[in-house]
Image (cartoon, rainbow, N blue to C red; front, side):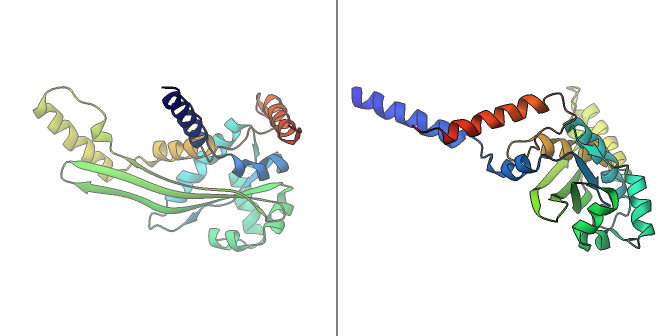
Length: 229
């Protein structure tokens, strides 16, 4: 019996250790302690020319919620064009230190759209997005990266309990979504999950009310790790 209890206890410890999320990706961000973030034009790898505008419109709010200062995206676009950067691909290929110096930013956020589609099958329309995110410091060193894929099927959200009424509602909802896919909620959700999710969440920025407490805990945890046993 004692042996069984010991094995069970060890298995609990192993399970707890295994379930603990890996936060090592945060170390470069903790060292950098970013204050301002330059959001450059979104690189588009899909045929919908409106996709970058929708994505770009949702990013500043998501980062402001985390406590970071972001430069106005319209001002950024205008100034980049005055410097000869008209295409997002050119901006993404430009030296990061040059871009950061133009605005006095200490970091740059690059976003690439890999998928932005609305697929219609029978009575269902599924809208899908696939975004890649990358943050570098003012010297071009990568601090963080993430990728997010999401799908949305609005016709599956509600049910009246009446099969015929549900069928008609599904057909109407799917048709509307097919004609005018609602990407903005999906984009906001993708940003929110990336900037706040397990394994990808950004630490709070200096304008967040949790900033001081967060970094106090980071310092305390670091002190515990270096204490001799």
